[in-house]
Image (cartoon, rainbow, N blue to C red; front, side, top):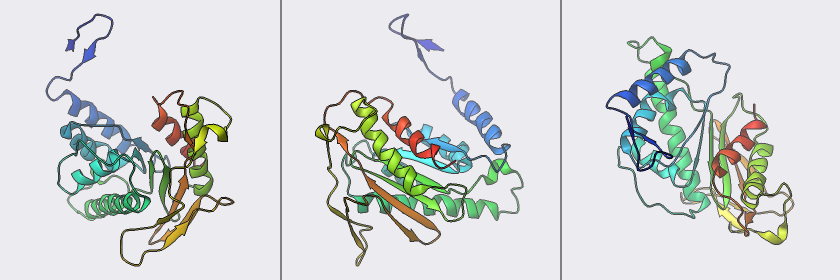
Length: 249
């Protein structure tokens, strides 16, 4: 049904069961696509837990790659761990915090995939889904990415550098990087985790993108030249994520 205060700006509300039916049809499409086709799902700001629950059931299991910001990451993790969505989250989280949350999301989703794949009662690809092989988180201060070793995703260092530069270009509304209108708000070094004894990596001006291997994946972190004269912010996440994807497919 349609409800609106103005005929010029209608708002669509799903009738009961309609949203799940739409997502179920999408799930059917995703599950029958070729395994060689990489599927990326870009998160958005959701305050309705039922929407995220539906996405967790119908869409996210079929995505090879996920993209999100610093608010969406802890919300997704909370739901994966059985907690509620948080209305407030840290707008400028530390690198170590984001990386620990990313590792946990990666671990939980891939463990779910393994558990589902080993279930002999489930034969359909619709239920088994795909392992997560790429996770990109974009924040105001930095970009972070996890990519599974041996996966289809390539050029991770170049991809995250392009995503970082796109963040500045999009917000400033310019193809050129104007250093007089940009500043770094990321610390001059960062810890790779909050775990005791974790490595600390300095930010090097001549090689600002840092990459290292862990477990079955590579992690890359890049600082963002934050635009100080904002031209636009709408669509930032989509443009940043697309910039990272284009060099990896």
